[in-house]
Image (cartoon, rainbow, N blue to C red; front, side):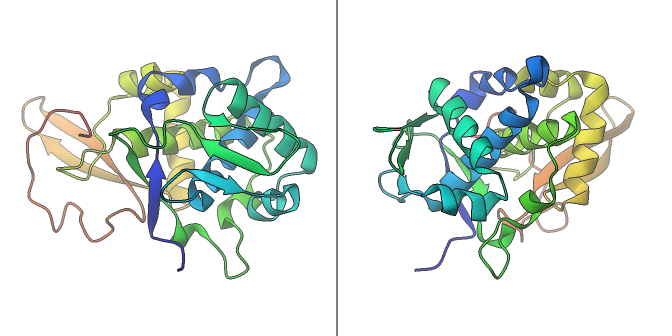
Length: 225
């Protein structure tokens, strides 16, 4: 069976502020970005029942474009933060932690891939700038906080900063990069209650036929479940 349009993202660690640990400080920024890239690849290739996957280093490199050293360090970061479990770090088996949790988020999958089986936009990342790490964090955050009733993400910059640890002045650049890579859609509407235009966001490739033009506007709390 081919890959689905989306796969399950265990996201309680995101809801608990875990993205804040992925920082650009102390020379670890590129490794932290690599870790989130590896997480995305694992989500795509994990068994749909167990959350387990067997991925060799060669396979990780093919999927993400990362060097072997970056794969090694990235996996260690994910394991150290309790996001994945590695029964034996010398082997290729890895599991998403809390895969069987009752709440989870949809994460885009099949449309991200090239015909040769690579995650297309990962191969365009250089990991030389903080904005790329910020983009990966915002992408995961938007997937986690996506409202299942409105199919939108309604987060202020203050809340994005609170969940992700991204300084407010950098948020706009990260979102713009997400739009550039066709991961995020920004929708603007006039909010009569506050008398100005406000932004909401959609994650591309997840329920793509439901958007502002097809779904009725529903006032719901900012929770995804």
